[in-house]
Length: 173
Image (cartoon, rainbow, N blue to C red; front, side):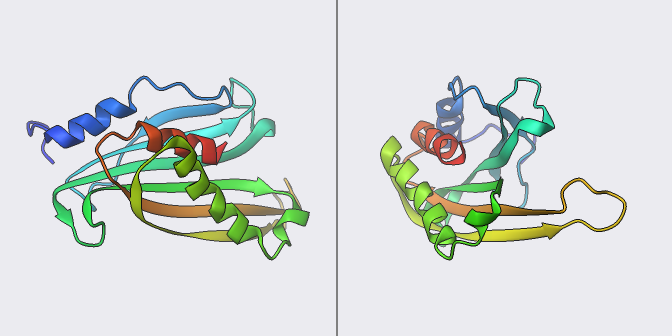
């Protein structure tokens, strides 16, 4: 995508639908560089979920990304011109990390959030991963920590993405 190239109308519609939204106070959102090789047009947002305005690390609850890809020619795997990709990561309590149904339950939160917001979509797919980290040696911050990570993508049915953005925020928070 060149700087002088005018974005397609549907992509502009999508961008406009993302602007000016309000979120819960613990949801701190910023725009980040978007991937450049997957689609000709893209925008990416990231958010840290933190109970403090100054993002105190002691109040960190998780982080997440929301990426919108647009290919005017369409992509067969997407069955459309748009694809939304989300990535979310959060520390969890060790008791929850041992629950064999954790992945299934965590996955269910995303389609529930999309449906609750009235987001029309198809081709929802993704993964849920539990990550167990153990610290050894000099940097003793936490002796061990379990994180939950979700990666998902779906094809929105329209270029109006407000409901998708709010579903992402609800899911992540």
